[in-house]
Length: 599
Image (cartoon, rainbow, N blue to C red; front, side, top):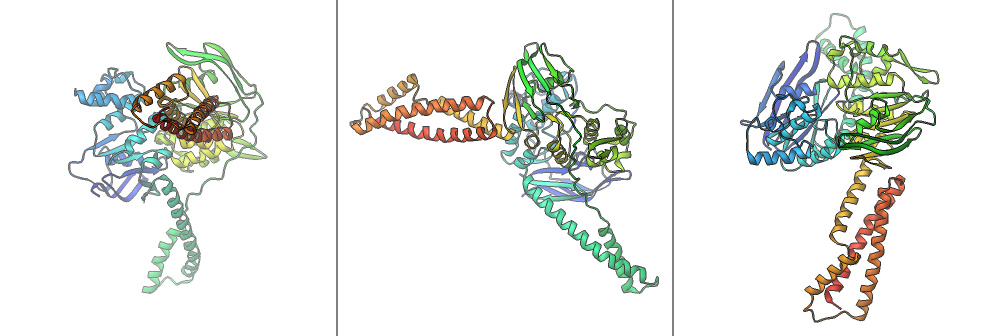
């Protein structure tokens, strides 16, 4: 394997904050490497150092000679007067490249190549930057949060694009499905050092737990020995011989291990003091549009108590607008939304936290409340809530301006929860959050005794948290799906395949069947053998059976599209549809064989 990049004994600190010390790793040709770490521990800084945009304290970074590197930054910057096309090609005009640019930009929902970059949203600019780096076809791709601002269809397209061929890749992402399906190596930056796992995300989880268990056992052994050696140190006189001095030096090394503290996962935070009445909210035939873009049209929905709903759909289909109508930030053009008297919303928006950056983290939270009442006499202080979401006591007294992007998102989340809402409305809560924080948030929402609506492109997160989905197809087409996102995609693929197969052959349809029969008979006009009486009976029977199977197929498809099935019924009917398709194919093939013989 040809080495593309070697990081040798690299160290970096900001004042007293040490990010990493003496780390080393390499990336070879064709490897797809994911970098994982907690917020604020130096992931983006490491990528910036590798990209040559930031200095470091010591070590070396060695690229293969003449290596072409493409870099996607977390927040790309463009000339606002450049067009999309100019931003992609640095003002070059190449017909072949333009054609390829249109293909990739269309996949990322950027269609107006003449639009000025200054007119695009931050998310659209990130997608143009992603297209830009893909179009340069570099030897090594370095991507910082490539799935942010992509909808689910775009992410699945990007998964396929990056997985194909012998591309070499180093990326930071918190999308666990993406890591699992794209990456072959996981690097974990933890405790100022780097750990390498040669496998996908599932393999990393398994081996990381083994590492933690082994380290925990090592610390336990060191503690047992430390107590013995500490007693010896206290009894020994100050004047010591050579052997005693050697044992003393070993004692101090042992002490370092014994006093290590592995970060333990927090206990699950379960509140019992959240009350919400039986009436939550009712969308009474609401309609909303912006020009020709329809968000909702005569949409009715009655939200149930303790419901946990996910909202998915392409960018621009109206997901965030729907949330803003629910919260009263926007008003529908027609109809109304009636909210229950006991509902207290907690809203986590895409816009992020707007606070005084000169304030300390703990002060931001205590300005809201000193504690949250969990019920049963239990209270959670502001400091405890922050610690639950992995803000150490030292970090709690940091100023806001010192926080990383991910730490700001965590702080914003804590401000929402500190208000003690009984209905959480979360618009893309997973952006920029590290994987450990995502796991904590998942557990919090699973145990949350109120209502939850989540808009998220994180498929892993959505599967863990929600009971069912509202799927926004655009132009007011909204369907309720009773299951997780993974179940929805499985059902959708089955439906798409079945639709394609049905379009190819419809023997029971009178016109299509007649055309097929005429075509086959024409081809077999010179066949000397004719059908036997038994074969004629079989063929007549097959036509009736095929017709019945197609009727059943249509009934199954209608039921699966209705949005009224339970998860169990959905699974059962999806399985039957697959089996029915095989049976239908088998009988159709036999009918074609008989029809070729002629009658």
